[in-house]
Image 1: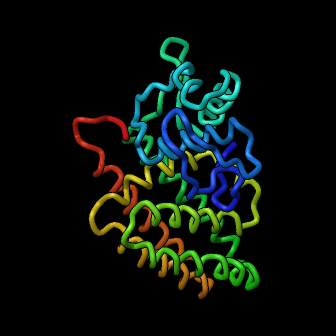
Image 2: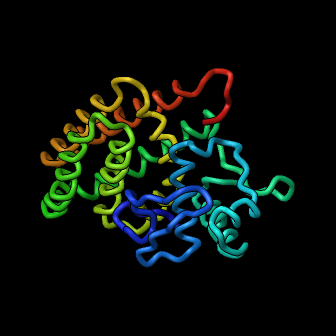
Image 3: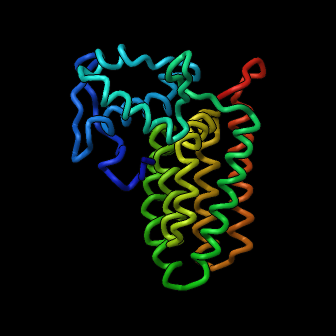
Length: 244
């Protein structure tokens, strides 16, 4: 299962959990493994659980006051999202992403989003639908410029909306495969000073180019936007560390 930012049942943000070991999980239709995976997912994305952190089943059983079966399913979901890796010797570990992986991740994202925008710009009705969805997100992004965490969530929704409105099941499936690592890397890239205002301006340019149905212009802006994000993510990785 991969998190959809528009689906409150599969990882929507904003719910609070009351304390280690006595968490109160508000399901809103989610299964117990999905609720557990949501909590761990956010901790991984926010790097409260940094790369290499162990996720031992007994400790998670105690923390979430449940049996091993929901824990194992939650870990399976996170592994499917490429947020953790499971080994026979060490068990489940939070995954880190090497410089080459970060670069490849952004390049795949650029390719998929360019293809989505090409489809959107083919018809006036899809352009109107895209702008109707993106502009409210952009307004919320402007309000959130002072908070990197909230801005990160809106930024992800902006780009995911482009994929969704392409109306391509193939692009959606391919994008879903990179969502987990992408959220981790994006969160880090917005931690640099000046990153959020610059990013916001580029999102406005993307909206303007879509309105003009200028595929070449929007592809050029999108490419630079993602390349800048990739550079920020790579710069944020200390030289003595190999993974983010």
